[in-house]
Length: 140
Image (cartoon, rainbow, N blue to C red; front, top):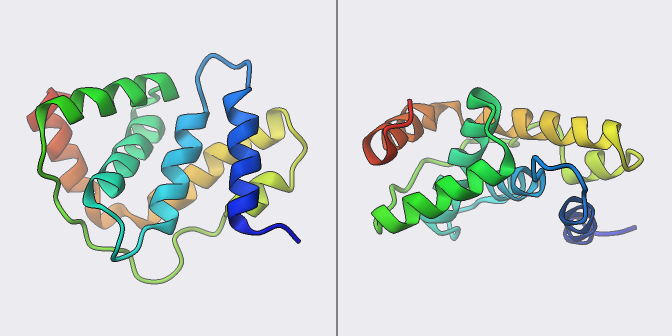
């Protein structure tokens, strides 16, 4: 049975080679980072993952637009807030559920569901993410 890391690597290959122009690979990276974050995870990784999930799910940004936003943020700011980790599981969908589906529209839709599942568990940090984007990039 493949490990979660193996499944994530397989999913990353799938999304990187995906012909869809919305660049769903970025959403996969953000969902995985937010779901797997722990006390040792760098603050920038958590913040960027949550920024990506927020922009994707609430502002309908493509993966490419999220990636560009990450680059703009990195140029403007060097200190990142340490956000509180949610207690308990971070969503009821994991990379294994995404990879259980055949490549194509069903798997791509499951990526969105995975992102939504993870983002829901981080709602306590949503105000900080919204404030950071407003202050740094005037995104509201």
